[in-house]
Amino acid sequence: MKCHFHPRTKATAICSACGLSLCRQCQVEDGGHIYCDNCYAAGETEHENAEAVHAQETLESEDLIDLELMDMLDTDDDDGLF
Image (tube, rainbow, N blue to C red; front, side, top):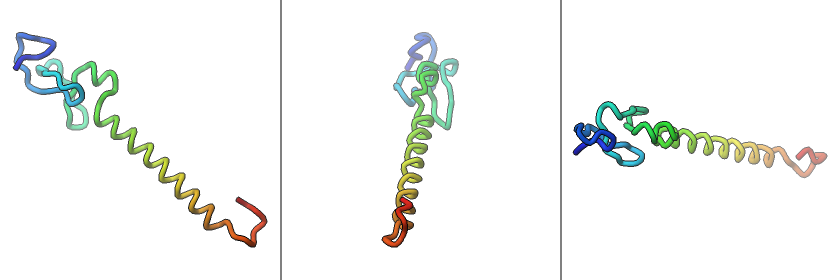
């Protein structure tokens, strides 16, 4: 198999995002995965996407905890704090 960007050079890896064949010169390694320059520059890395998903899940979890705490603190005998 030949490199997508260098057709005379043997490919040594496949981009984890787009699946293009890559020679050593075209590879970017990040988080144990290999990407082409285009996918890496565009942020199409599984590593970055996983971090973004994890950050969103964390925010959602924190919001749910805040709502549950407010529910626990809201009693019939208070003056309407929440």
